[in-house]
Image 1 (spheres, one colour):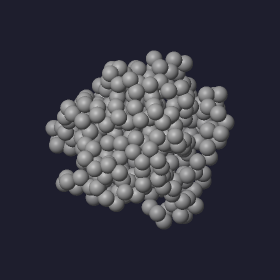
Image 2: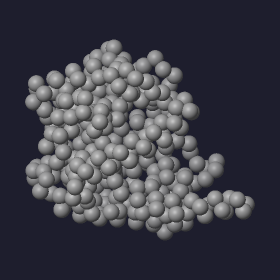
Image 3: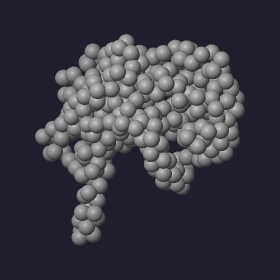
Image 4: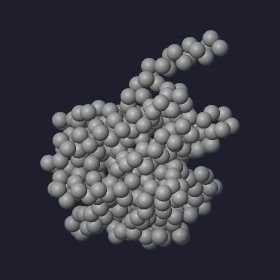
Length: 347
């Protein structure tokens, strides 16, 4: 009992820090996951404050992007641009990534084999087309604005192998969900055309906005997420990535949209809005340049040095990935190899 108390005291500073940053686990943080605190509105207060600060930063960063893009992002929760790169540039980028050889992380979600490479500044130095994309002014400004943090995103290349010959595991990407309690963005530049054969992205337009119905839903989910022991359902849900049913979407007045788009389409989405990966009807591949920008939602400010701050975040996240890799490799959840992405059957 004494050891348990001492251990809790040692972790208290970490738990408090998570409370005022992007910490979201109701399971691992006893403050975030305290039933009585959430009954009094702890989770709801965090959600509302994060939204207010997000809108404040967007207002200050508005000059970065055209008014039409701002309206689309605020109204729908996403920006979609077909034929984003000039055709010749896109073809060079697609060829470069399809023959890329390097360090690849590989793991299974459902029947999908996911292959992903972290495209750091050093890796991009040997990939001129990937580096040109990372420096593309329109992309940089959009991501700096939509993230509300005025910094470039982290870049990955992601290759999905649908219906791969693997032992199926639970697939959290197929459930309709919000990534976390606060606004943050992910982006995809599709190297492959996307339709029902290879699993389109599905997003619920308008679900990123914090209306009264969404706020009541957040409150109910926070109380459910505080349950312990046998009352707790397994899965990622309790780590703050809340799942929502089709009936609940209808009750809130939302309708999902399926993104069947041609290659060379850019999608940037606020993943506080509900979304999921669509079902792939056949054995297929889907490659994207995948981007994410997540930061402390309670910091009212943003960086004045976008690229320098982006390099710092990239370096820090690289160290975090190394620690995650060790755990996942040891558990068998992930394997890493040096080579090319699997591109046997294309769509």
